[in-house]
Image 1 (spheres, chains in turn brown, red):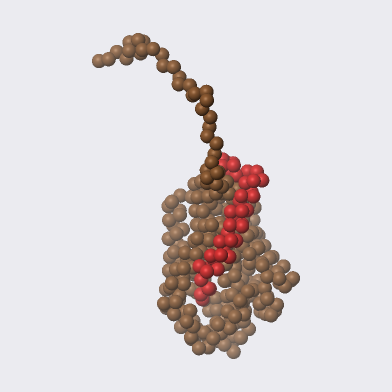
Image 2: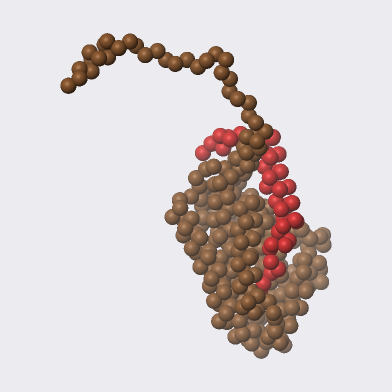
Length: 292
Length: 42
């Protein structure tokens, strides 16, 4: 057996290795500075989330959701200028950062859902009361209503054919995921308000030309469109969270939670396709019968 | 959670934030988004 105490006693004391005096830290290259920029931007996004997070504590997210959903569109309507969809999108994305930062997915999805719901109620009301003035602040809404009217009356719409909507929906999913990631949700919310408003204006016109208003509203906001909206609601929250985690380098949620959100979101999008495949003609026939 | 680990504070940080998430996304949307985001399907 080796006597370690004796060995240590006979060995000379180890001197610390000093760094050479002439060694200096290498100056950061242009490339290394460039590589740090996304992390700097991500840290600022996280700080913005830190500013907006307290605004959504308690029940305040409900008040904010209603305000973001209705105030920009009402101001836009009052002045007759479009742009409310992107303004609402910016505000919603900023508030979502706070909830994503805290991984408060229940409040986050509530905030997004209630904002869109409040917005839809106001846009349907304005489109019913003053269709001309409202269509001026809803891009392409009138043309969309004309297309829908043709579909209800004839059953003909090339966009509803299986070979058309399957690739289009896959493309929408890819594009939405990409833009949610790069813009922390802003582009997806902007596009979402735009598409929801097409449906809202169409529903308002349908209400004005239907016998039963509850039936028109129930069927006009197609069940597959609602499922798709809910699917994108879940996926958008998840991708904002993933994006903020990547940009900032912070762990914001567990993989188990992320997997659950991806599963729920993609499941709802699949349900959109199934519902559309099964119910398309039934819904159209009921809408046609209900017309004045 | 510390947000300043990567120099996220300061005016320059916010300028970079606006350039990447604001200007960058606007350019991406108007050059690519209008082509790859399909027209709304019902």
